[in-house]
Image 1 (tube, rainbow, N blue to C red):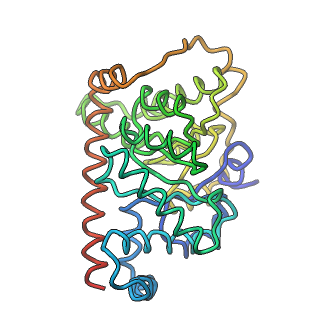
Image 2 (image 1 turned 90 degrees about the vertical axis):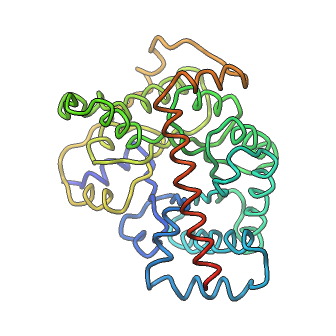
Image 3 (image 1 turned 120 degrees about the vertical axis):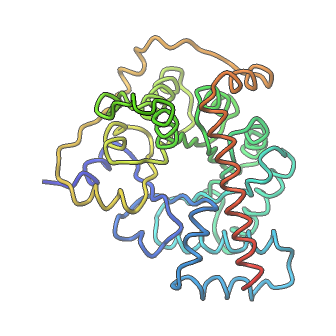
Length: 316
C-alpha cells in the first residue's frame, strides 16, 4: 500500500515548509516555503553555521537589511538545488504596511536570485496579506515577479488577492484552528471539530471552491497544519505546505487517503461573487475578529524573529 504522502501527491502538489534544506530530499516535495521563523530556526543549527558565516563574510560591509536578504537568498538557492519547483522567500514583515518599500525589497530579492543564476519563475516573493501587501503584490505581478501572500486568515483577504492577480495564497489552517479552540475553551469538542468541520479546513475549502467556481487563477496553498487530519481533509487543494514532522507522519502511514476537494462540487456550490475595495476590505477585516487578531499577531511574531535574525547576522 502506498504511503499517505504518496497518495496525497496524486491529488495535491506537496510543498515542504522549512528552511532546513538538508531534510528535503527524503520527502521529494515539488516546492518549498520559508519564513523568518523557519530561517532563524535553521541558522541556529550547527550544520548551517558555515553557510551563515560564508554568506555574511562574502558581503560584509553591506547594510544589515541587504545582508539579511543575502542570507535568505542563499538558503533559497540551496533549497532549489533539492526541489525541482519554486521556493518562497519572505519580505521583511516590518514592511507589511508599506507598499512602496515592499515592492523595492521584493525587486531586490529577485535581483539577488537572478545574480545567482536563478530565474524569477522559480521564486515566489512572500508578504503579509495586508491591504498594502496585496497592492504591492499586484504591482509586482505586473512586473513578472510572482507572489505568495501569507498570514491569510479570511475570505476577504483571499478574494482581494484573487482580484489582484496574485500567483498564490497561503491560508493558515492551524492558526485559525488555534484561535477557535482558544475561544471555545472547555467547550471545545475536538472530535466534532475535526476533518471538514475544522474551522481552518473549512476556511480553505470555502476559498478553494470560490476560486474554482469563478475561474480565479490564484493558486491556493493550505499552510500551518497542526495534525495530519487537517492535511487529509484538504486533499485535492492546489498545494499544501507541510512541516518535515508531518511529512514524516504521512510517509509512515498507509491509511487510505481520498480526494476531499472536488472541482465539480466547487463549480456547483452556491457562492456569490464579491469584490473589495480598500474601505470594504478594511471593514471586513475589522468585522472578523479571528482574522484581525491572527494577522496582527503573525506580523509581530515574524518581525520579532527577523530582529533576532538581524542580531545573529550582526554577530557573525
